[in-house]
Image 1 (cartoon, rainbow over the protein chains, first blue to last red):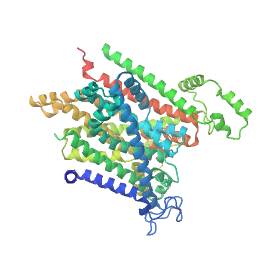
Image 2 (tube, rainbow over the protein chains, first blue to last red):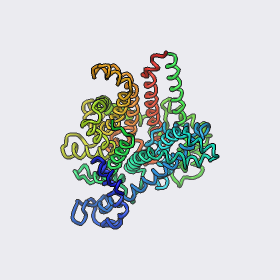
Image 3 (cartoon, chains in turn yellow, purple):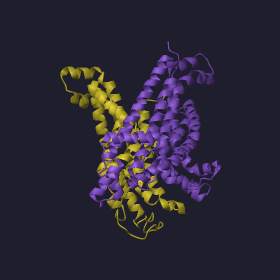
Image 4 (cartoon, chains in turn orange, cyan):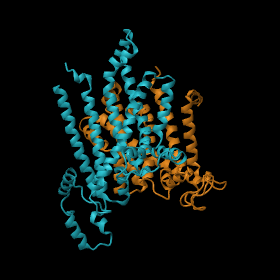
Length: 275
Length: 319
């Protein structure tokens, strides 16, 4: 614990700022029902009210409290993005390591499949799949996880390939261990640090991707409080000089900035790029 | 030169193959939709025999591979079918909008490419000094911003508060001058520029730092060559290919980023049309629009590949 605090205090200001942002968001997401003054979907007043002591950030297009929805949004948006990222990593890592360990036909099939998926721009692909399969939350998570897993696959395969040629993997093979055991006990522990950094970056991509989809109307659907759709719902206010739609957009931006700062510092300290 | 021609031919074939797979994929996914175009056109209450007649007329009861053939040959000859929403030919709908989208993307690229290459080179030259550090923080921040956040910030401050530019890009009038057109496109183009420059600049910096770290650069420096000569004569030829690659990849991103930006500014391009048609479930338009985006994306990536091959010094001077 002391070592952790020491590392943290030596981190650059941006990384500390990023950590603080992540902690605040996690806190808000976990304790959302206690923090929010009103319910997520409760219509409490007239439409588009300005900020007041009762409604700190005003009300939205249906007369729901903006602050409460921002707080609940931390829960919904971040949770869905996190789930999709984790799923993408499970798919990508298993496939990538399997390709590295097995080689040959498995590697060829997986890699060409991934090439084909990556040839189509991810936003267009995502929009298309969501239009066809509907926009329920499980479909949203599955679509994003599958699309993002191709990027994880590339990294996991590349890292795995470097580890597979090591002597200790050869030793495990000669001992008679199976492919799954090797993936689990030899490759995964040694591939962890690039994968952790990638997890942070992927989370940002997924989070921005979901927000963009929601903003375009094909992501998380109303009445669930979600930052991307909140920007969309209140967008017309901006023309009247009311900055309300900027608030949920800022909430999205702040979290990705925070995560990116932390990942940047992590990459910097791991790679030893200090010249 | 023979080996280059062979490599380029290989890439071209691969690119065509990918385009083919993408087109099959897009048609295949659309097949998954419950109901078909006739159902969508006539609604749930349509009589069975009228539906059948409609399917007969539109050729929907033919086998899928024949329908795919019809569609792809139509796409290639410019007959893309009709929109379900307003029955207009899709080719007409797309013609203007494709031009608009390319105008927007081109305007953004015109500023982005030189700006990010210069910034990237400067950051690489002064790496780990104040300039590099601060530009790292700034670009990292812009990468993290969702496009619509940047867009609404620009609208709020430059269009609403300052009143310098229009917040909505109304370019539908056919008689507007090029100057007026550019003026009304400035905010969406600026949004794209800010987001893509951040990416492109970081990748340019990484490419140059990579080259500068190689031993032969150190040799050149130790020989006592001037700083400028080391960069222009020794580092540049090797850095050129990764930089061009970075530019092409980012232009591909830019084309896709257009979708969100066009929606924010109600800019009449294909991105906005695509999103609108998706919400109306106007599948023929969605199919054609997706195909255009995917094709441009594939072609730009292909161009990146081919240029990288052609500018690779090792391939240019085969032993």
